[in-house]
Length: 159
Image (cartoon, rainbow, N blue to C red; front, side, top):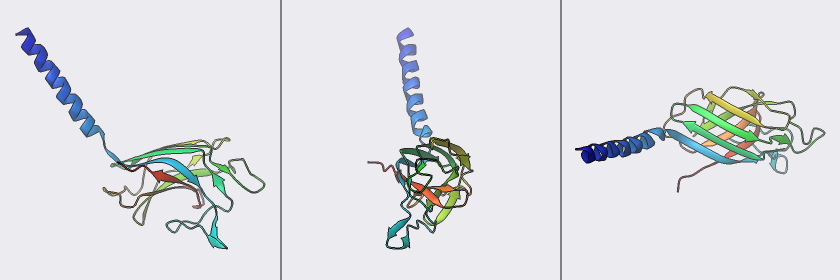
């Protein structure tokens, strides 16, 4: 009787663990790594992405990690978003930024957060409007309060 009870408990724990892992994966899209903006792409042509103009100076980002859940919750961890040109080179340009996720051509925005002096930032918010599931052709931009993009996330594709 005791062995049967122990086996039953183990089976329930394994099934419960498996179910929680399956249910816990509510990720819509992820991004690992970032690309800083280069304002021009060739000659005088601006480096416009999804209709969003680039910042006026080049920007670099040391690291970026972002996860968007199917309920629209977004978590972004950005490190070292700093000016890479102009007189303010190596500074945060006294900027605040938001995450802007594109699913196709529709933009979904987070609230603004201030950049730390070293360019670090964290966003923990809910996107508005809520993105669709699935999110086709995801593009994540980090944009200024004025709407210019400073950095982009690199989509983490499942193998």
